[in-house]
Image 1 (tube, rainbow, N blue to C red):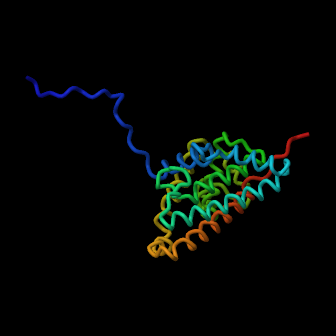
Image 2: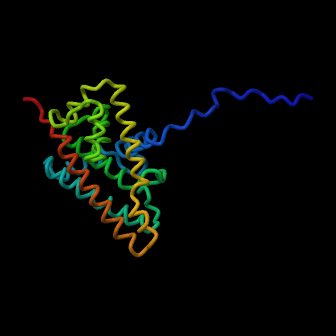
Image 3: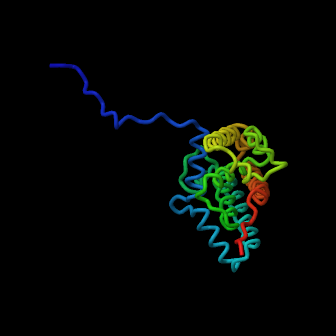
Length: 224
């Protein structure tokens, strides 16, 4: 009787795991822009806020920011207290509530202002915006001078492969941030202090990201 094992079906082989930064970018876009389960997409939440504002884009954007800043703060609070809202919805623990919430906020702002969320350039701009001032440095490495051109104009000039490399750099930088929140990580060891600190930091961070989004995504006015 032969001990030889049958050759496994090559179709059943598992593809190599994506690099952490690449995986993070894919998950933020999938969950933060397109929505998963009860977590509504950026389009849906943007349209709802625009309808509530009777079509007033400025009011809708202001309310979108307020909604997501509060959500980021509550997510930070519950995460710090060890609650079940590490991801607001059941997302992998590698993504923090802050970045999920902020991704949807930025994408919703872009959508309400008339930008196509299916366009790769717009999705790249959403990701860059999450980094705030750090995004300027990463974009500069591609040769884009944000003092001379807007983020969207600069990204549209990039070849697809260079823009995709930029997305991966953003993912790596965001991944690195998870390990750099040293003070907050230490504070989270003290439950009675952790909640307010986590909530305050995430709320402020989301508001800062909203400021960058306001610049990155000007309103697209229809041509007469």
